[in-house]
Image (cartoon, rainbow, N blue to C red; front, top):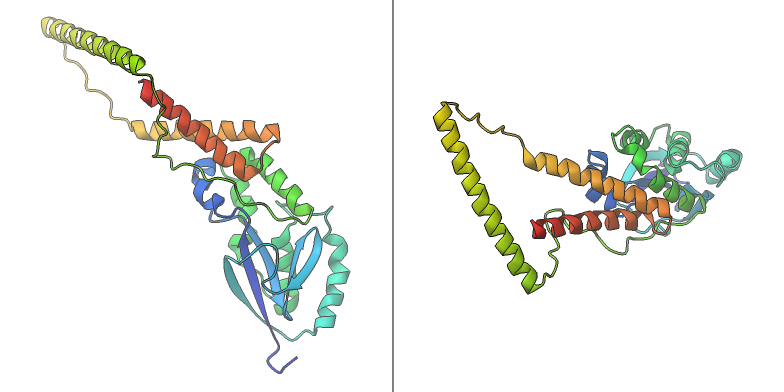
Amino acid sequence: MDEEGYRVTLNVYDLSQGLARQLSTTFLGKAIEAIWHTGVVVYGNEYYFGGGIQHCAAASTPYGTPMKVVELGVTHIPQDVFEGYLEEISPRYTAATYSLLSHNCNNFSNEVAQFLVGTSIPDYILQLPNEVMSSPMGPLMLPMIQQLESTLRAGAVPQAPQFRPSPVNQVVQPVTNVNNSQNNSFEESKEKHGSQEQSSKTEDTNKTSGKQVPPASTQDPLGNARSKVQEEIAKEFATIMASGTLRASEAAALATRRVMERYGHLNAAS
């Protein structure tokens, strides 16, 4: 130990590997930057909580490269005293006590930071579970949370998603039969012609009776459509997660893709 003490930093990772930022607005109605995992770096090691208290050489954890590094301060506590402290608190940080919502890696990092330098880790990291669960769609995320919790309780690292969802504004167009296309065009032509005749009759009737047609209401059809799409994606996600066959990241991407393809077929048929 030198006169300046030991530097203490917080390595911050995104367990969702970018999916939270992409899909949180759709599922939660609010933007979530990441699903945070943290580890405290001191004495050349990184200490974190997963399947119990774990440590390894700094920057060599299975979580890859940190999304950001937060400076916590400088400690003058010797390493052997700190490791004795970890042994003392270890019964409270086991695989059995792990809870993604209330007793997770960030709670551990916060307690360790307070012991080493007398400060807390950033509040936006600690408050993430409350922020998610207080959102209108939060309860629908419970299957994803439970699956992620099981993975972390076992000391494993969530896997990267196998594919990414298509952008919402990009619709997958189905291949249609030429004869069907001609029939559809013919039917559309008939419907359009009938609609024009009906409109003319309505206008004549209104002129004769002296009634004025009230103006159409100015609603935001895009807003209604967006809400409907979000609701269908959430239902599809819950159904896929209930089957237990896919990881949460894959289920979220698949739910989005299915709904987008469904709307693509509807648009092509209309």
